[in-house]
Image (cartoon, rainbow, N blue to C red; front, side, top):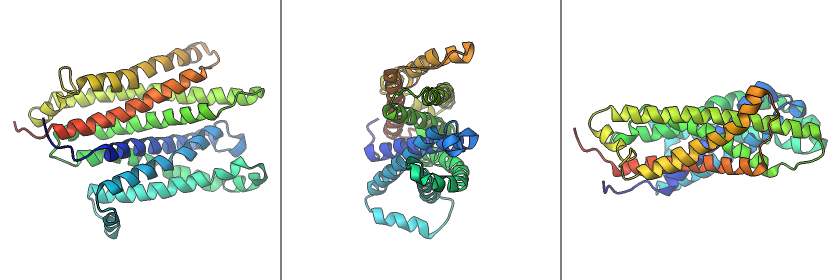
Length: 320
């Protein structure tokens, strides 16, 4: 303990924002390809549009923060002069390509807001679909890279786990969905159009049920992450003890990440999802519930990265 913290809030915010943005774009593109690609007639087209409009901007902001955290931001452009297999070089190219593709994807949705531009929106549909195909692997790659970037530092044993990248990927998809739910709920105006209301609740059910499944997967990945470290001797086992019961950051991890960020949201989501899933009843979660649950998932995703980054730095290698 007592190691100097060289990576602070800018890096933590980058890991969180890049995960949220990449998750939102991946979910949006997947929904568009699955059944929302029919422009105005698409069943979940509005859901895909929310994810597209959200996605690139958190990644841009997070990238801006980490570039200036380096101290000499303009030297970052030197990474683009060569192509090699270093994590920083791969990550820089991946972020640049993803930001470009996701921003173009966002632009294809803008004409859908103006009825006079309906023909333009329909002409852009093939390009939108192509960009969606591109953004799915790019979004997954950016989410995975946030974990790989930490794992590439052998001096920090807590980060040297093959499961960390998977954990950050699942968390990115979950927080991306949470952000879409939050924005969709805040901007939805309940009206007399029963068909529009039905589509809204169908989209909300799709997102909420998917998030509940991802939370269950994330809990399993956290278990694997802890078990892998705990069953390993030496530095890794020592490092993970900081978030196990009795560790200095255990309370923060189990309360903010596991309880508030995962278990409580999952239980609440299942309360509204199970009746439709099992008994085929209409799905309708209160607006306040969707807002609170989404915020809880986002807080848990941020705290996961906060704790991993801090715990990894204060638990340096100690030897066998």
